[in-house]
Length: 288
Image 1 (tube, one colour):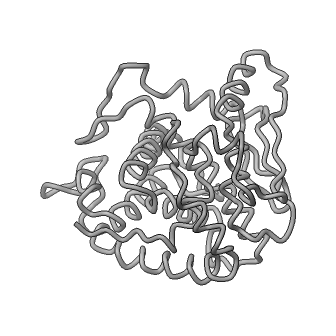
Image 2 (image 1 turned 60 degrees about the horizontal axis):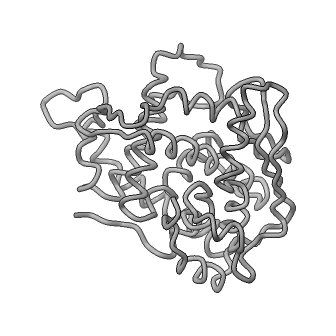
């Protein structure tokens, strides 16, 4: 098995995966493990039907956990993160603006997920409701916080910043334990694949969902070839959900570049090592 996760390169994995942390940590964070520069809020939705999703997020302490998991990052300015009604499922992050988790997005993820007890197929694998819920919400939070960090640290991004943020999100997800990596990657892949029938808008800043799907699988396969082998081409011609062999063969090279860039631009210059080591000792999935 090729297994390329490491403690050092997993800083965002232990710093940003808000939906995975124990509730107890959010209620009573250890000394120093709460970032005062992260300001959070759960805005009251104007639409009554969205109120239940505000309650769900609050009951899981999603944003409070984010404050804890961002604690190793030495932020240079305030980062505002809020849950709010947006009028659309998702709004793109803009420089200096809050990171927003839209209640409509949470509602859409909930509607698309399998029902309780239902198990559906994604290629050769099975998908549970928990995976379908956790994956895409985690990916969105990671993606938008990555965009904010690009701006805050004035990081050079060659090419599309949306695609770069997707790569950071994928990289953080696969640098968790195998169980968490599988849950978040498969759940996100399911959500992206369900949007393949969306018309292609070549003027859109974000890559088409099919491109995002295969980019995610490429990062996951490079991190752990054995675990994500079911998503790689098995026969002479790839099935619709399979990562083509010609792409899979290049994924490791792309992953090494991504890892090197992450270490050089984020981990080494901006991470408080003692806080990071303290954070690593916590039991992330205990209360999930």
